[in-house]
Image (cartoon, rainbow, N blue to C red; front, side, top):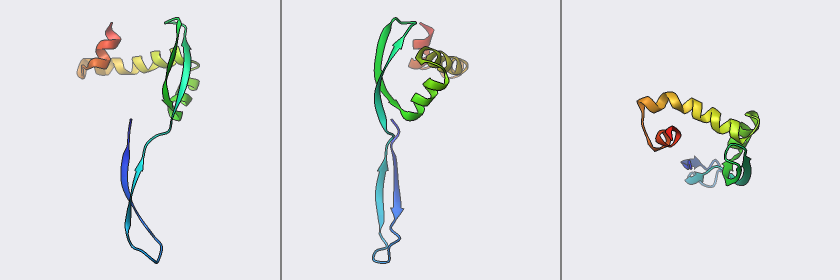
Length: 87
């Protein structure tokens, strides 16, 4: 989860103080059926991730597309995520 902290200046004439703000993405809980795994998967998604699932025409296609994007980096940056794809 990405949390962005920033300061915002108050432009009212009464005060010249800076206000501390915090932003985090909105996540929604969704359930998708995976034909490859033959089961339902429930997890939290951002709206951008849901749009990407729709653009890929389904959850399975989205996961495969993301995996294919990560494979070239697995040789350079081995991690737990890449080792999970190798199994």
